[in-house]
Image (cartoon, rainbow, N blue to C red; front, side):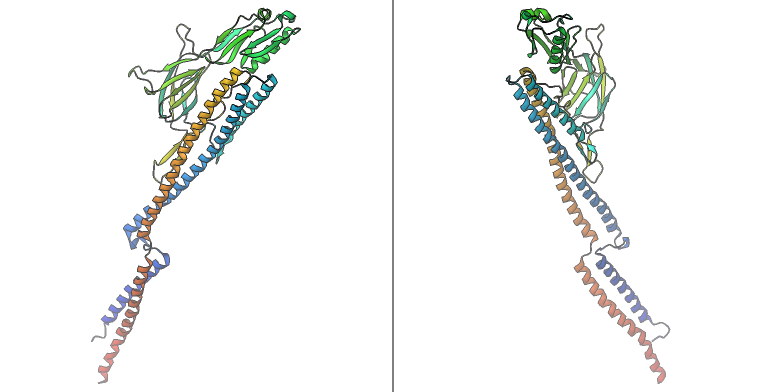
Length: 471
C-alpha cells in the first residue's frame, strides 16, 4: 500500500465525474425535450435538422401563401358572380326591348337602366381588390408595349409566352357614312310632307308645321340614341363606330317627305380594318405568332387567337392606315410581351415553385357591351348577342379562377402532407425519446451513487496504514 498516491481514489473520482456528465446530459435532454441540445451532441444530426427546420418553416409559409391565394381568387370570383347577375339583367332588358310593344319613352327608361348597369360593371372592375391589389381592372393581365403609337394593346391574356410579335395593318376600319338634304332654313313641313322617317328602323315622326330647326333637332336626337352623328348643316350622317356591323338605312313612308329630305333609299355599311401577320424577311416565318394563330378584325379592333386560350386584342388608331393611298400607308408594329403582369403566388418552399395567375379585365368596354343600345328590334337583337358573348367571357374567366383554386387546394393538401412527413423526420433526429432517456438517466443515477460510495471508501482506505504504526 502506498500513501502518497491514492490511485483508487483517482479512478473512483474519474468514474464519478464521467457518470455525472452523463447524468447532466440526460437531465438536459429530458428537460428540453431535445436529443441534440448542442452541436457537439451530434454535429451531422444538428446540421441536417437545422436544414430540415428551415424547409419546414418554408412549407408552412407556402401553405399560408396558397391559402391567401385561394382567398384572393374567391374575392374575384364573388365579384364576377355579381357581374354575371348584372349581365343577366341587361339581357332581360334587351329581350324586352326586342318586343315592339314599347314606345320611345319606355325604351329611354330601359336604355337608362342599361347605362346604369354598365357603370356598375365598371365600378366593380375598378374597385374589387384584395389587400390593395386590383383584381378585375386589367392590372393582373400580362403587360406589353408596341413600337408604333398607331397600335394600342387592349388585352393580352391566356397562355402567351414573352417575346416579340409582329402585325401589319394595311387598311383602317371605316364607319358607315351617308347624307340627306337638311330642310331649308325657315321652312316648315306642309301637310303633304308629313310622314315617318325611319333611320335604322328608329321611328321619327315629321309632323305638319314643324320648322327646319325642329326637324333637324328630331333627327339629331334620334340618331344620337342609335349611335350616329348627324350634322344639321350638311346633312351628313356617320356612325360613331367603325366596322361592317355598322349601318345606316334610311326609309320614309311618304314620297313628298322623301323629296324634302333627299332620301333615296340609302343603305350603307362600314368596313373592318385589314391586317395580317408580319413576316420575318430572313426566315420567312411569322414574327412571334405560330402558324396555328388566326386573326380577325371588327372595325378598328384586331383579335388574334390561338390554341390553349391564347388571345391578343389591339386597337388601330383611326385614319392611321389607308390602302387607297399610293403608295399604301400601312401600320407596322412589333408588340413586345413581357413576363410581368400576372400575380405570382409562391406556393413552395424552394426557388421557382410559383403559380402565375392571370385575370382578364372585366370592364364594360373589355366585355364589348359599352356601346349597346336597345332602341329598335334590330339593335336589341344585336345587344342580346353581345351580352351573350360577354356572359361567355365572364364564364371563361370564372372557369379559369376555379381551375386556379382547385390547383391551390391540391397544393395546400400536398404542402400539409410534406410538412407532416418532414416534421416526423426532424423529430426522429432532434427530439428526445423520453422512455429511453429516463432508462439511461436511472442507470447513470445509480452509477453516480455507486461511484460516490466507492470514492468515499477509496479515500478512507489509507487510514488502514495507521494500523501498521500501532504494532
